Amino acid sequence: QPRSTLDRSSAASDVYKRQVFGRTTFILFLVLLLIPVFVGRDRFLRFILANKVMRILSKLTYGQYLLHLVFLTFSTFLSYRSLYFDYNYFFFLFWIYWVLGYLGAFILLLVIEMPIFNLEKEFLRPKRNPQ
Picture 1: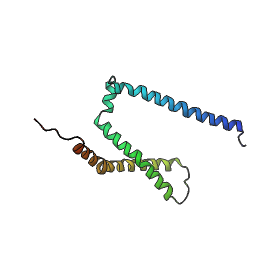
Picture 2: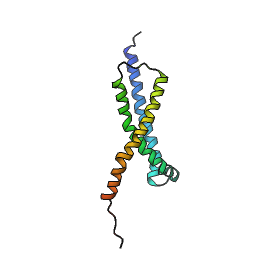
Picture 3: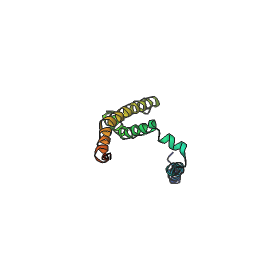
Picture 4: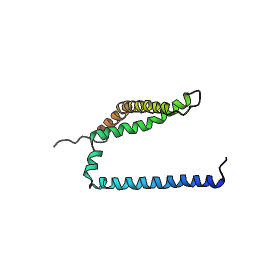
């Protein structure tokens, strides 16, 4: 049976409430978690976030974030038929995109980010003359 207008407005209202309160509580929790790090009070969380492994992982994760849309767009526009929803197929695609995304992010890190970072160190941070 088709849904009534009341059901549709109720469903839209539920989605709106979930988005507003879900995002608000997430941002509030994130702010309450990170303010002590910025102020310098929470040394344990600062130690975890300042760890060298976490810094490298954050660079790779950002690169993967930038590349995942490229993979999704190519897979969508190169397919000649519509996708049938299957958990196994999407689980397989998830792992393929995850691996390819991190490999691509690592290559972009080596080819683009590291040379630019070295240029920044060379030109924007001049060496001090020892006196």
